[in-house]
Amino acid sequence: VQLQASGGGLVQAGGSLTLSCTSSGGTLRSYNMGWFRQAPGKEREFVAAIRTSGGSTHYADAVKGRFTIVRDNAKNTLYLQMRSLNPEDTAVYYCAAGTGHILSTIREAERYTYWGQGTQVTVSS
Image (tube, rainbow, N blue to C red):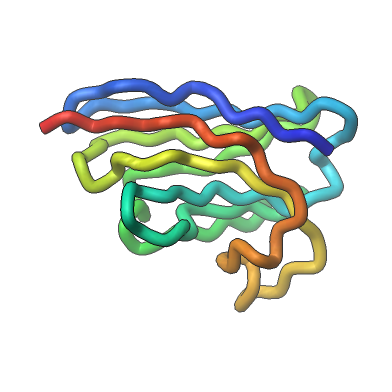
């Protein structure tokens, strides 16, 4: 499974962006999927996750109510819909795929096996 994240860019505070993550060489429907982000000088942090069926989602407190994680298994694509962006959301965003998560581990980066290359999101004030 090779993941490719896209959709990043420069946006003003209060704006919206939608990130996409697709796979080449494998289907994503068997994997729990997550979005993580890493800002300069900071550790990678959990943003959102969605289970294989799409029926269960998880969000970091910092993005809850503003970001929505969605998967389209028919299109083999994962999305992160982001609105009400603020400068603190500036980071490189990574998508990730993994299996075997339980509630306590789905937010842990080390529990994901496959990673995309990242897409830069910059929010100007």
